[in-house]
Length: 438
Image (tube, rainbow, N blue to C red; front, side, top):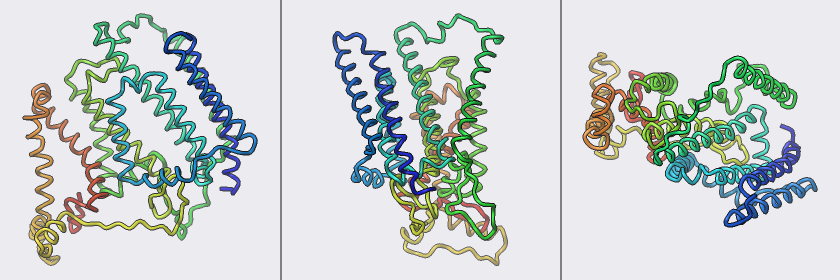
């Protein structure tokens, strides 16, 4: 990365500010032509925002690029810890769900886009942030963030609109679609045009951004950090909190099995063929939590926030290779025997027979085994009589237990992450003698 990369990237700030102005102007054109009533104030506010953004563009071209204050960057880095990032993202997801009718309004969505682009443009003047997002293999991840935000917002917007129409007795928008489109030539022409545009984009991309190729592999030289491809970074991040057999094999298999089994577990006829949230609240929440919190968020953390020695860094924090993360790993059996009862943990005789060693290990891990039994057996029995009583009657016994098994297995990841961050708990059950840790 050349030293003048940050200075070069500040040239992007005026373009970003111009895009802000264009977005604001479009919003004024969409909702501000009626200069009577309350729409006048909204149109004037967006026009003022456009003028401010254009002013930022002029200042950037004059050699004075706008940037975040040092105090703001230090504050963002201070709150960007693993636990605060996860809990804050969960709280944000909850707020967006509860206020979905407000946040899916087009002016609000455009305001959120403008605010995010403004923050991104101001951050480009920081050399650490600029060098981070300017890496050729990080550029598509930045684009993915905005693309994912757009498709998530548009899906929620259509679902909220359908829920409003259904509540008014008009039915979803999809029910009104009566026009049929032929595959040839209508659909094929659209696909051909899309293919040409994407091909042109990829050619321009390959000319403007160099391929992120490194030096030839050498057995004595290991990159620091050594990161997997972006689509595996989420699993690599989760390896901090669980064994490789669970994260690398069980979790991907559960994802595939869960997606395959989902249509067979769904007994609610509502929501088929159209966007909705109110008719499928539980399934919507489970999917959004699993996809955004357990798949997308770890990818972003591994891409932008993990640095040398796999330590956690802020967005504006220099990547110091001397920084080492100090982890204290304690198993549940250590908490129970040594901290709770004040006695040494039972030992496993390495010279005993296999069955005797298994019994000794199970006795040592008895607290963790009891917790797993309560979690996977007692908790579903309790929920089927309380919170999920109606769902249990509708789904039947077999569907209920499969759905609860998948749900509880999915929740083991965030629960394990929270226990690691708060109690430094490494494993609930730890049997290294048999290569079994959970």
